[in-house]
Amino acid sequence: MDTSKEYAEKQYRYMRNGASVEDYMVKFHMNSNELYGLLELCRIYGKNVEIINKDGVLVFDKPLVRNLDPKKPSLDPKDLIHTEICVVSDTHFGNIHQQLHLLNKVYREAYNRGIKTVLHVGDVVDGNYLNRPEQPRQQFLHGFDEQVGYVVDMYPRVRGITTKYILGSHDETHYKNGQATVNSWVSRCRRDMEFLGQDYASLDINGVKIFMDHPGGGSAQSLSYKPQKRIEILESQYKPKILLIGHYHKSYYFVYRNVHGVLVPSFCDKTQFQQKQGLLNVVGAYFLDIYSNSKGNIEYFCPEEIVFKPSEMWDEAGKDKSKVKRLVIR
Ligand SMILES: [Fe+2]
Ligand SMILES: [Fe+2]
Image (tube, rainbow, N blue to C red):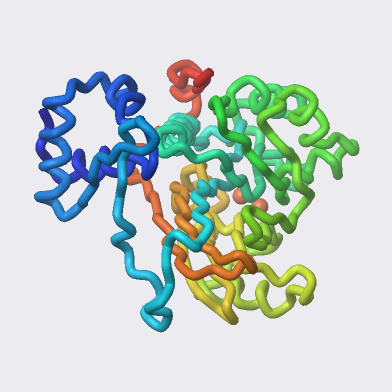
């Protein structure tokens, strides 16, 4: 058995609080000796997980080890609502630098963690800019039909997971070119993908207000400047507890005016445009672990950043097209 810290931590995440031990053992083809060895290994690495009998079923029991707000010592995690979501953005399907195999990896991880909602913050497809004559050379899928067909066929389809998405600047080019809307076809063909809006959407998950934002325009030198400006211009009815920002292809977490802000990275490696402009590009995703109270206020927030290394990326989608199997978990 793998005894590395990475393996123990990964398996610890899969042992969800309250989840059936038997289901876990079946899923990972593990016998009881291997499981007890793994629990010991987790303890050695400081991750404590117990097995308890709950209504006649053996389930995992994980103490809440992360620090809740120290100013609220009376806080009892049992009184709080626990929400785990995954956030992705800027998949740019059709661009030769797209990283579908990494998106699949994140969805598989979300499935293993028992996550039900993945939020996509826009630029689902690469679009078609008529004022960028160099763009077709950067694409292996051209035009609306090819790009949207690819989303319908290839976007990860995972049992129990709903992808809630907004559309961004690249998606909108199809509308500008001929009033074709990506969402109408995706929603018609994919019941697991729910469209929330063009450029932005406000939603509520377990009472926690979330705002998804796909701005336009270029990047700023400071990672925090533009996101802070976005919070300042939000009207009070939209003021969320969590602000998720796509479009910049960067990774950054901050708290500003009581809002947890996340710049969500992309699933597209650096493009020719970004290279020329000297723009940083990050490929990755976020898993958000949230504890909120009955009023929808956040008592504990842990943004887990996933960033992929250049060695994990594929440099051209020609390979991608032939090698990536679509991820379907039924
Ligand atoms: Fe983008
Ligand atoms: Fe964009």
